Image (cartoon, rainbow, N blue to C red; front, side, top):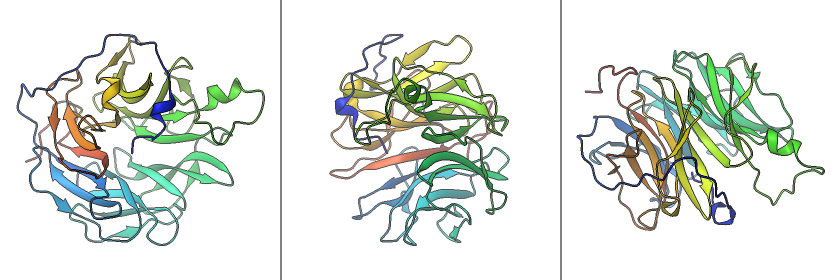
Length: 316
């Protein structure tokens, strides 16, 4: 879900011009998107083809089901839910059957399978501190891998499983002389670390507010959301040059970007048509395609499975 505080942010420094496009010039790579939507009155998980066809509702519960993510083979989905009275991480088959609560994931959010599928990264607030945790896919061997006093959230794996990108307010907190105002939105930046929690590197600094990173499975770049003026944009940073490109106009309020499993497409949500819907584009912000079309509902937290990285075989 895109944060609802964008109207109060003022970030004016752009590194490269905004790229805006509304036309689809190339055929879509075939794939399957999972996302959450409140169209039924509460948040449920849905799946849909990239061309907007074959939509299916996967969860049916009075609680909040959201922020789904694919397993590496596209057979399983992990997501967060409070259906049992507290938030935790659940898994289910891609068709919505065989739903299981994963042990030791209390207060868990934003779960992501490791590239080999043997681990899940997620964040959770425990004892008043929000950290990123690593756990076996069956709920075993949980580890706090950030273990800091900052807010560390939204993990994203590299394709080799060696690196995790995440958002943190740790640099901003170092500038404060008193405890943060709980009513103030933290100034998040993008960081990377070795997947055991060591060697933390700051990717974006305090001159911007950046959230929800996603590492390209083919390497070399991270896509994320950036607050600009009174809006929210999708941005992409080249990890080799350090240059950032803004891919969507701030006024369109676009966020929650995620690379597709092949690393060839970016899926995100946007308010460009008045309410949140799911869109797909390429890494240049071009070949934009709207996937969902709805009125007075929110469609958000999308993940796209479309084959393997490095131009691997597309989903059939």
